[in-house]
Picture 1 (cartoon, rainbow, N blue to C red):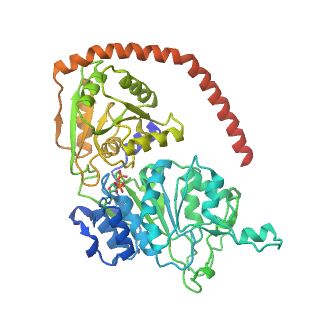
Picture 2: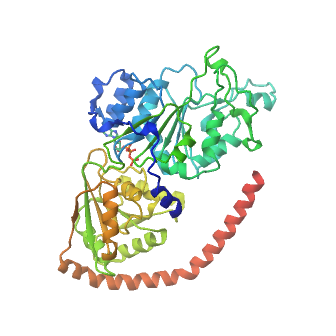
Picture 3: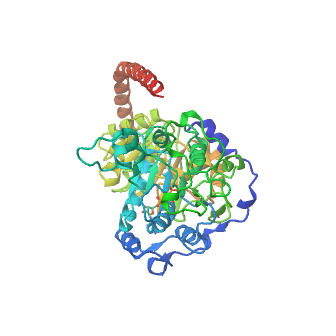
Length: 521
Ligand SMILES: Nc1ncnc2c1ncn2[C@@H]1O[C@H](COP(=O)(O)OP(=O)(O)OP(=O)(O)O)[C@@H](O)[C@H]1O
């Protein structure tokens, strides 16, 4: 996400759409034990217990009330709830419960997330509950084999041996192999445009998770496309008579039509229900309008715009010029086995800081890097290692800021001060999740202090402890820092020519790929 886009998001207008002025305040809702949750399918209750979940969190109870409860999915839901408050299950559970009574398999729920790792994380949650009621979940995410995805998403008709079929007839009979799809926008568009048999015509639930982030990035107009493809005619009985469609939509299998064969004969086709969620939900009317929400209900937690997790402790650490790495190493060495994420401002800083940390002699720090500069396969491997506990310290750019859920992260460090309030909320929110305690340290130089105080005010943090490290501890690491820095310089210099060659190769590869893609299009 570009800094300019973030900055414009930060300057969001104070104008609030009328329906946002009277929200449902989730902070008044209590946790609810599974056995007292009305209408919960016992099979889902069992699946939740297997996940070690014995009660639902407030946001989950509130959404349940508006979906399976008396609200009956009648309104679109806009949920603004703190990081780690359980938003994923808040939509996954009602969707799975409502679809559990479906008679025929077709794609009825679509969940869109901004990144591959997030989409797979959310798919895991659906996978933990959906099979219990016979539903199947698929994923459509970049950097996966598209052929593999197609075979997972589309069911081919069984052929009788010895009979020749016209391939055109066959493609008419393709069916969805999944009830629920978790997707990133780019790969979703690939399937919409190119995959035979992939259709959104039966879609009934659309979830846009990390909404503010997804709305800022147009990704080949994925949202207008999905909305257009799922539009019903005004009277609900006949397909829209307006001629639809730009030719770019490729296989036009996806036009939503009166679905006589799916049990809606003679009845209005159900409206597409939308659920949009974030810990920093946009209030900008010009962005919200893109979602074309139906009688939306705004759910938020407390009165302020942003809210930090209840058990998050914020700490600040002011460093002498040029000693940030020393303070960081002293801090990391003061912990036992606690998992920690260290956020920097760029891919390059991430890389160098990670190398530097590993070069500190006699230090127990073994850090790994996670950033947009790495191949997806490497990133996924690193994240897996961090989840498993093989990696204790993860140095990352903002690639990991949003949504990532890793159990046992007790500390987050802003090595570079977050540029925006939203960035602070999402970074800090990698800890203190699911009601657990966590700490967020921010390293500052003295020129950043005032700006940081303003940022804290924006995020609703009224107590930020000043953390200090004894000077003798800093002196101890200062010597090692000089040696590590020398080693880092040597390493960077030795890598420079190689990197130049790699950059050249990468550029020419990218150019070749672009040519291929445009040829395919
Ligand atoms: N009812 C529950 N009981 C116990 N743990 C839960 C419950 N619901 C969710 N969790 C756990 O809480 C953690 C956070 O959930 P989730 O990732 O959905 O948060 P989120 O609100 O989407 O956060 P973010 O805004 O950072 O994306 C997960 O580890 C999840 O397993």
